[in-house]
Image (cartoon, rainbow, N blue to C red):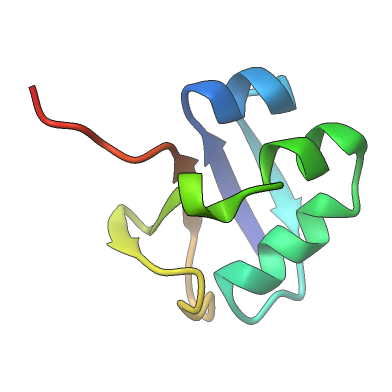
Length: 83
């Protein structure tokens, strides 16, 4: 399956791109992260501590155990704060 993957804030800075299209066989967000980590060191660094990463699948906040079947977009970003 082909997914649009978006990176925000420091994740974008570490990976070096704001978004990309990824061909993946990942069943869950966690599987996708595992695939991305093996691509290059910059991905491994960006996803080294998932406690500081949030995820949305098709613009809905979710967890790393969320299924990707039928998904078109996955976004990774740091925790949001009020203001």
